[in-house]
Image (tube, rainbow, N blue to C red):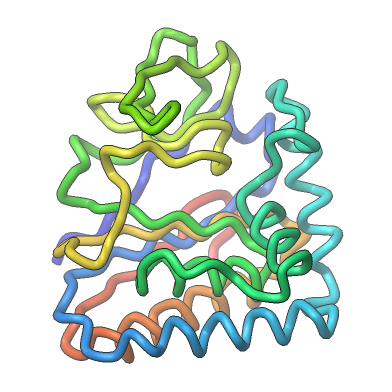
Length: 231
């Protein structure tokens, strides 16, 4: 298996100094134990209610500041981890979407870290984190129907050769590369700032990998650290 090493544009360093992420590539196997996701969500909500981890608020505040630097309004469009944690605190639980999505959402909530999951087979070229010029195309849904829009110029986006795959860094995922239980090749990205200890980033990655292997015995995974900090 060839692991995914996403390209991080040099402009990102000025917006988020010390940004680092774990890129996890997966060759899937049949999902034999979907209950792993529910168990992970229960652990995540228990940790959240206990006020864990201790650095969570500082990490999410740092993400809010990063969003402001590229023109986003985090009160309206927060990073994915903050949105999930607020929903879990409000409802006392996490929504069930799909075993794979439920699993990586649980890791996101437990570790206060944005986590994305993508169907790698739908990707064209290497994932790239970059600043948009505003001409790119993003596929989404509006009023229940497929739609296309463009990011704002200066907005941080994930994209591939065909277009934007996630807007406002990790706020909203596109439809084309969305992950579900039918995917055979998967890519996960766990994104952190220096306010999250590096060992916690690796612990989050280890927990996601352990959950994937428990859910899909026989799956294969490869993990790559990207960013400015080496292990």
